[in-house]
Length: 306
Image 1 (cartoon, rainbow, N blue to C red):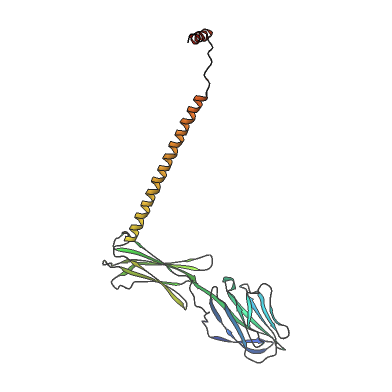
Image 2 (image 1 turned 180 degrees about the vertical axis):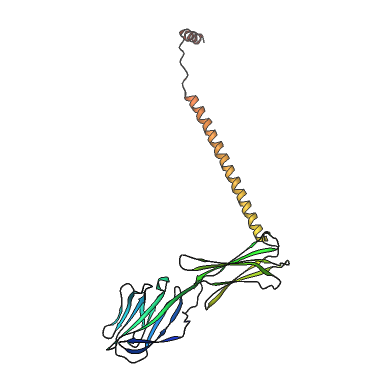
């Protein structure tokens, strides 16, 4: 994500006339404050006329019109940060004429309008209003691929931001041109917008071509990325890619051979153990006894003769 280090004020300081009980007072505040997501934001109100101010209160105004107290500075009791906002909102300048606050690390839910209320005696409340608008811009993604035609290349660039960024494709070479240019915007669930610009680049003359993509958002600094289209196209692998592919192929072949050898050795060893076990069983197995008495008697006579 890229954004300026300080919030941007797009409008000049607003001098607003605020009435209370038929009287008028002037409060100087910022009509619109722009800040990047994650930044600390400074909001301020200045009462231009000298009044007897008893208390200054900062409120957050919800889209439904409800008001929620954030912090209060009282003439007698000093500073108070309401529960739920400790560590998020704090005073930068605590005063009854000039009062400013800091909102830490603003997120999407912090976007909206804020009120500063000067409780004066005997006039009552005098109110100033300032609105916070957030922005964010992510680095664009540039993609290049060959089209069906060998003389054309499809170039696509996407950038995501809040609000919708402006995406531009750039080619320094004057003899190249874009055709079939199209832009598509998609709103994401978090409120950001992804803008994609696609074009067909043609007019190559056998030279390397550099293509750039620029993303802009309001007055945020432009973000650019570049990529080079090689003269021989994207189908031909470079020398480093070829070497890498060769190394991967050789390693794969060696691994396959080693696995085959190990499996063969294991199978042979298992078969040998199986044969050895069977021979042992045959040796241990007792011979069947001779059941025929005649044969038994004949054997005994032979033994006696021997």
